[in-house]
Length: 153
Image (cartoon, rainbow, N blue to C red; front, side, top):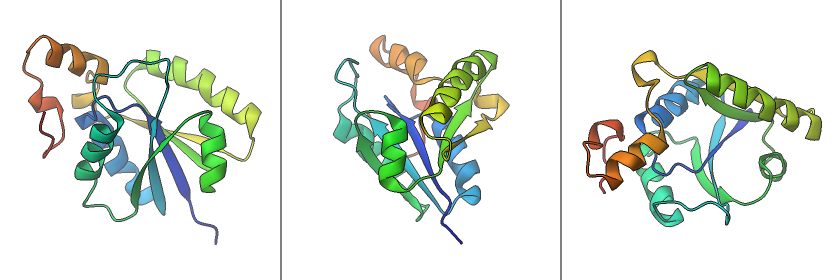
């Protein structure tokens, strides 16, 4: 049987408990999950690529079938290069669903063999986003409770 490989793409700036929730819950569905840290030269991140990768490695060190990699370009092209047939995406709310549906349809039109799999974020984490956490960090608000264990800023 062919390996079930999923790519979970994002900037993870920073990784949150919401990201960890999605990966931990999806871990049993796939033989391997590649957490793909997107490098977009047009997008300004708060944390370096190296820092984000280090945090992801710390967060998922308990799962041996999780790999952390960075990539540039189209997610579909990265999936092909990794022999992944699935794109894993987390959904917090209906706005995420509307946004992610358009991207999933576009990805399907680019490669019909790559399927997008949506996982709903646990309700108690549904309001957490990297954007909100960055704002808390920048404005010296209480952010630590939204980050996975072991993540130190």
